[in-house]
Image (cartoon, rainbow, N blue to C red; front, side):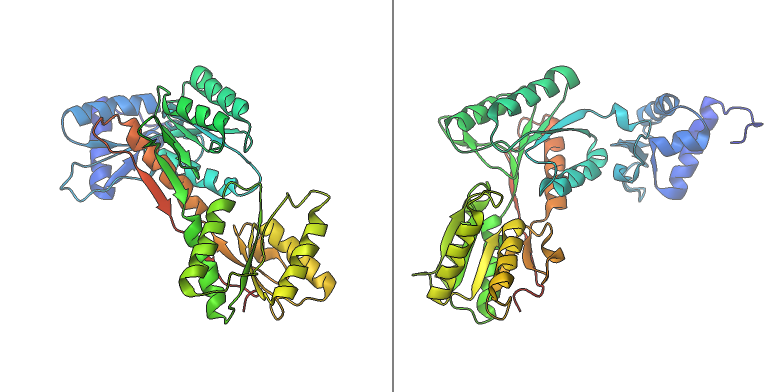
Length: 370
């Protein structure tokens, strides 16, 4: 509509919407508002009347012709940030333990999927084990923002963590754990969760190295990572299943790679690899793996000729020299799935069963293992 054209009457606007739907099959509220030169509030009134008449169906953030007309829903994640209808979506809190490693892609996946799921994300960063801060952040989101659902990655070990998990499970809004799983109550009922199958990922690394001819595969991981236990379990179980030698094979949990004792522990570990004839390693995470490869180069240990290395996380493994083979969790899919799961829970179906979803990572083969 040009500036010289008179505004459309309500019936004309609705006829224009139906004509465009027949041509395109789907529309977003923001698109309709821009095309007609009216506010989103006006468009919603027209849509409400058309829906009451049965002429259209409303979906999250958009409209379509009634089923049977060949139309499909418009994914709202195609909307530009700040679309006039996005701010009206119900808020969902997302509290993550890190904003600079591992979690940014999960956050991005959640944000990208949120509009199509009919929600908007309100992000807060915390830490891996600060129970009091997690509780404070959650209360602020509930009381100040008025969130209608919560995505959160709480600690799961220890009495304080158990109390926090029980408190989270009893909140008046639906809660979905992301990269964490837990049970609550006397019957150990599961909290809804979306996690990576880290044990399976570690198994991929072991099988890859075994196919490269390695019969002794060591393990090095940070003791501070909440995923280390599952990664180590997958390494050991897969090694046992396929007959990889474990007796005498280095299996070490280290302090944080930034601690003063890191280099000494790394040298001890490499000495143990040489002494045991271990020529392949699974290292969690990328930071530890890159540091280890650097120390190997300083000591004249060639990667992969003398020692093959697979990293776990694939945040920056491909940037190393040599580029590191890595296990890559599907972080974007993890965030997307968590939002979709929570949005379904927010619909309030009392008969909906509790869901626990595991997403498989994949192996990315680079120079450090072949």
